[in-house]
Length: 56
Image (cartoon, rainbow, N blue to C red; front, side, top):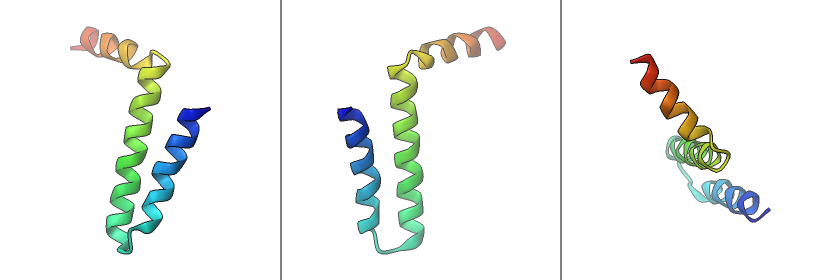
């Protein structure tokens, strides 16, 4: 539950950025950070790494 609130707070902080382009960039950066953490948390990051190694 704490992770959910932390992630929501990260997105809320982007509202404070006045310039639209910078805000969009920060939202995208935050989204990628949250996704990266969730993949790691659920063990998908390791599975993805192994799958990519087999393909190359």
